[in-house]
Structure formats: structure tokens, C-alpha cells
Image (cartoon, rainbow, N blue to C red; front, top):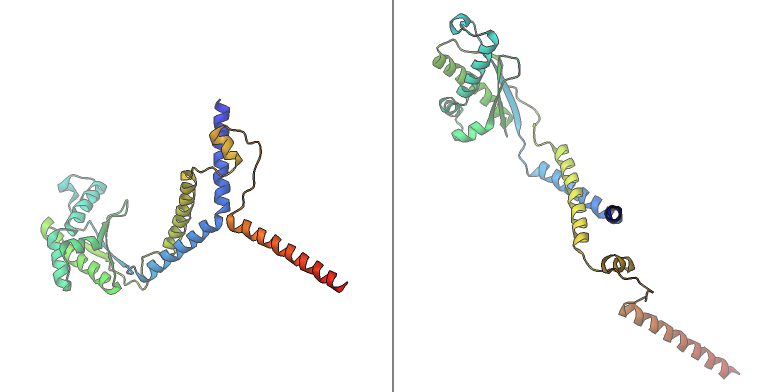
Amino acid sequence: MEHDTNEKIEIDLKELLYLIRSKIWIVFLTGILAASGAGLVSSFFITPIYTSTTKLYILNKSTSLTDLGLSDLQLGTQLTQDYMVLVKSRPVVSQVIENLGLNMTYEEMVAVITITNPSNTRILEVTADYPDSYLAKKIVDEFAVVSSSRIAKIMDTSEPAIVEEGFMQPYPSGPDIKKNILIGGVFGIILAGGVIIALYLLDDTIKDSEDVERYLGLNTLGLIPVESGAAKHAEVDKRKRKRRQKRNKQSIQKGRR
């Protein structure tokens, strides 16, 4: 019984594979159309984004490790978390918006910037993703200046050193058109294959003698070919014309005699 069940599953999988192979042109055509659509949308309907990053050095000469009683690494880690919160604080963000004269809210500016700390370093990276390359650089540079001043005031220490200013990127960092085209093509192929298989599985009509034996458990003794009405009438008309031509030919031959 278990062998029969496994055999039926294998036959069904083979049928699905044969089905996909017979419709392979639809699958690839859908994939090509989806990839082309993704490429067009990425090229003409998605705003290019430029990225710029500035870097701050967390520890400075005024930091006293003996007063805090922490190891060098622990201190750097703790200060990194504090600095990341301070850089995104409302006073810093609002001051940056005001200094640059931007028509942005606090939430919009926070969505533009990203604060990261590379592992095993005391470097704080402030990154801006913005549709304008020049403004992306100006934003991170202003964040470096304002946040350094704010940090020194809050923590009662000297300002963190700016290791690297923002760079005006000549080419957009996003969207990744090649990646979107690849994703669109794969999605189109999967979608077409899924639709074809779904339509096949939902179709419960009996198409041939194998379906009769499989689903109804009946043995077929013979097959009767059935022609469509149009094809049948066309064949009948063709036979009539041949008979008429034959009779006319015989009549002409009799008349000559």
C-alpha cells in the first residue's frame, strides 16, 4: 500500500514537470517581462540615493580611565553607545536642520541618517542617505560638528575628533538596478510556474482514458474519436465537392464519346 502511494506521488511530480516543460516558454517570457519591468521602474521611477559618511573618534586625551575604573575596551564600548544616542537626540537633529535651512521634520532627518560603530574600534560613523549628493555630504559634516559640540557639553569633556569628513559621492548608491532586474526575473519565473501548477491542480476535468482509470476506477474498452462540429462539416463538404467534380468529369467524358 505504501509502495502504491509513493508511486502515485512520483507520477504526479512527473506530470507537473512535464507540464512546466510544455509551458516553459510562458515561464521564461513572464520572467523576461518581470525583469524588464523591474529595470524600468528602478531606472525611471525610483529616486537615486547618494551616501556620505563622516567618522568621529570616541576617546580623547581628556578621558580619565582611572576615575571611571573601567578598562580601555569597556570604556570605548560604553561611550560608543552614549554617543550614538546623543547624535540622534532631538537637540542635535533640530540644530542640524536649522543650520542647513532644510524643510524637514525631526523624524524625516532621523530616517536619513544611520549611526554605526565598526567592531573592535572606537570610531563612530555617521552616514546620510539622501537624493542629493552635495546635501548628503553637508548633512553628515554638520552632524559631526553639532554632535561633537553637544557631546562635549553634555559629558563635560573636550570635543571628539573628526577623523574623516563626508565625501560627495559621484554615483548613486541605490537603487541597485542589476539586483532588482535579477529579483524581478526570478519572481516572474516563480510566479508563472506557480500559476501554471495551480491552474492544473484546480482543473478536475477528465481529459483522457488514463484519467478515467485513475479517478473513476473504470477500464476503457475502446476510444471513439470525436471531431468538432466545424471540422466535421468541413470534411463532409470536402467529400461532396470531390464527388461532384468526379460526376462532372464523367459527364464530360460521356459527352465527348
